[in-house]
Image (tube, rainbow, N blue to C red; front, top):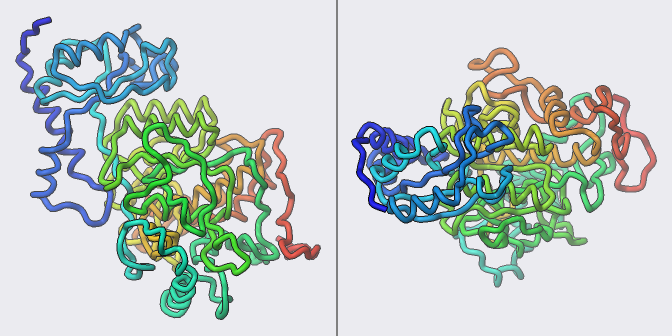
Length: 509
């Protein structure tokens, strides 16, 4: 089929500006300089999500939010490939579409001009949006690493314990990153962030996992499991429990840059699973099942909105109810917005995502309604200097000088809203599984309404754009749900269970 090129320079210019806008953001503190940004803009492909037209703004969610035209995306995809020099990338399998022929497709054109011609030819029939680049909410080196290098050297496992001991002592004496009550011998590291989210703001004795008045940790299999969408999971790390693959795109048990391994450690690290108790603990040690979806390649540079949408679906299909995402895009893509909205409203999914590390910029999906957008604080409960601040920030969590599992089978110290996000995800995981009859919006409301209000000179009242409702606190959220029960809800345990076997009740609250 021969086509006639339309005079579409205005559309082509708009397309090019979208590429430049997307490339101008890398989600981290070490932003590229203008020359690097231009180079990125020149190399980002003309990659689009194509879905049936919908006036609702739902994009790829189709009929569930009001697709207006019964379009055969199979045929449109074939036309793009055969007549417009496009390359098929992926099909977003049955996100919410019935029939399957309406499922969104991702195609890549050779040029912005080809994309503009195709868009003009199908105007009014399809939604065609940039499959925007998605970046990790880059965690930055906090000044001390367990060891150098990003490769996973499994031969180093034998000396991990000795290195861990020395690392813990260094952290204890110089950075207060571990529990200062533990000062000698073989000990677990209880990172300051874990102590912070389990702080009993009523003055009671309730505390973090593994101590007498720690939380009840529901046993496997969890009713409301979590899925971490990130760069992978180093299964060989001695502190990390077995995880479950939730990825159809890439093998989950590789991690080229260690980002996903660090994020996962904040939630599920379990102190080497050994009687020696060497290592670190997370918010919910050994949570099972924990689903992992690897959405980034080995260099972790970027992925795309379409892959993230598919990852969300794969996580949900695997059985996850909580989606933790230390990642995002600066482009508001209607397809992603509508899809996330549908997952929240119709699938009882809870989304927790990084607010980003770049001033007042919105970062998606964190900035979508219904998603818990997480900012970062330091160990003084002050907003971290890198943490984004805007009217979409919902809550704050530890994100500065966070010790976690690293990609070298050892440990590292990092910072970023990337690290803040799994603190909130972990609290939500413990909370929802102790109140399993609650729904996603009730758990979200409990987290926000029970947060410890935080203010500073820039943000003198609470809630505010820097901290949202304040710092996440597990015990305050627990008490909130005791005082404000979900409909037909009851907790698995009405009080924290003494780990030591003691029957002494915790201090009255």
